[in-house]
Image (tube, rainbow, N blue to C red):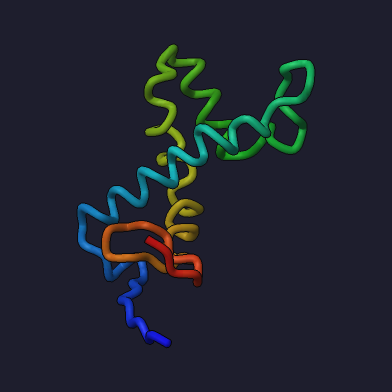
Amino acid sequence: MKIVKINIYKFDELGEGVRESVIKDEIECITTLETQDMWDEEGRVKPEYKGSNLYKAWKKSEDMLTPWFFGSYVYEYMKKEIMQRVRDNDYFSDGRIYNGAWYK
């Protein structure tokens, strides 16, 4: 049997560049995955999303005709939630999320 020791870090213990990358990854997850759930089968915004910060970010990107800034608007409107999410995880030193099972 081998005993392997690895270093696991909280978000605030990561280097600045790694923290920025973790935040960017969280925003990408929100913009690509969570946004898909915002729409019903007819392509309308679901009622539970109408007042959400995610909807506000999407709406601003639509109103400003700047969909390429959607990620920035997500950060602007959801910063508190994003920071809570990234602080809830443990990480390897490179910013990959540690989920309790170690793998290469």
